[in-house]
Amino acid sequence: MFSHVTVGTQDLARAVAFYDALFGPLGLVQRPVEPDGGPAAACWIAPGLPLPRFYVYEPFNRQPASPGNGVMVAFEAPSRAAVDAAYAAAMAHGGTDDGPPGLRPHYGEGYYGAYLRDPDGNKIHVVHRGDVRG
Image (cartoon, rainbow, N blue to C red):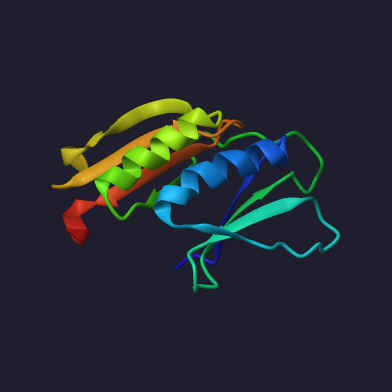
């Protein structure tokens, strides 16, 4: 369904450290971003899959990056333990809590997730969908 998702950052090095930590437990890896004349960027993918991609960019218009109200990006985790590990790693790398890991039965039986903000305030959700994945 998605080609890619992009969030903005004021500090690309800080964002890369945060997302590398968050994505390690989820099995996502960085891929090279070829310079195209635009702002600096970083990108992550699932190994062996060209899409979808997650990008962090310094804003193209050179204005300050800001999170969107009501905008959230959710990443699937292979297990509850991976949700816990990703959340802990992200918190240790500048993330802020927006809802600690735990069951969210109102979303479905076995739905286990955590909510956090990256260092730029973008809302991130890490979820294991036990309701559909087992």
